[in-house]
Length: 400
Image (cartoon, rainbow, N blue to C red; front, side, top):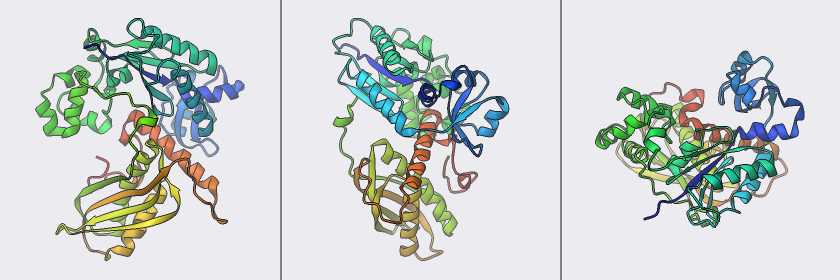
């Protein structure tokens, strides 16, 4: 059976690259896009190559970046502009194949197995895509080419910026196995720490480890990582319009100890609400309702829900609504074993709902821009790269 030819196209320093097109004064100078440059608070969202060479890192506090690079120019993000460039990039990819799967605002998977322009292993098509994007959009992309999505994704990180990496069945062990295990897709900081405790430091050591050992330590996630490290990934590239329509998005958790205080409950709901909101944004949905399931230590469950006046994909709004539901439905101090938060009555993210006379739409837009920036950081660097201070060192098992 013929191997698939999968491309992962990743825009280089995307936010910073787009901003440079509109701020000619920053060319040749270290620059970064940051959460709130005016107050020097927040974190670095993207940086150009000069800032990178100065040691500036994505997701680090602005004050730390300025300490490393005192001349660093800070610009605020413009997510609407980035979305426009993402759409234009995907239009370019669509000229090469109709199988294009956006995987984020700055990356896409392409299946070019049966593309008319495919004459070799895919490297030529990747190079042509890079040249076209550079010429038409003024930004650069890096491309990984492989027989599966996971290895294509890893390949796009190997030759940045503006490079192509081809990973085949003949060379994937030589190319990928010497890499640190943190370079493996879906290995975040917590998983990397667990790997280190097992003596696993490289992707090759992960691949060689007994799958049963990984499963015993990390559950299904460990088994999945073992398959991926061995190139056993047959996940297809799915066009956005072919994805199954999502009816609801939920997440639940049984806590390490029973929740009894309002602070406990709020913390548990916050973690679940952030997960639900992130998944809503990933599938381009908003919700008109929030449902909460509550289970006590005797395993009795109640479900309650509330309707929203306008649809949302914000963790802040989902959390507040869920907390109100529990406050109305549960006796204070009565222990809770499990909570589930579900976004219901979904609609497309283009549905902004009907504004009231007293609403400030700009505030929601700013909050959504912030949460989308955090989505991007967690997707790139793991879910634990940034979290609310309230989740640090809790004894409920949240965030581990």
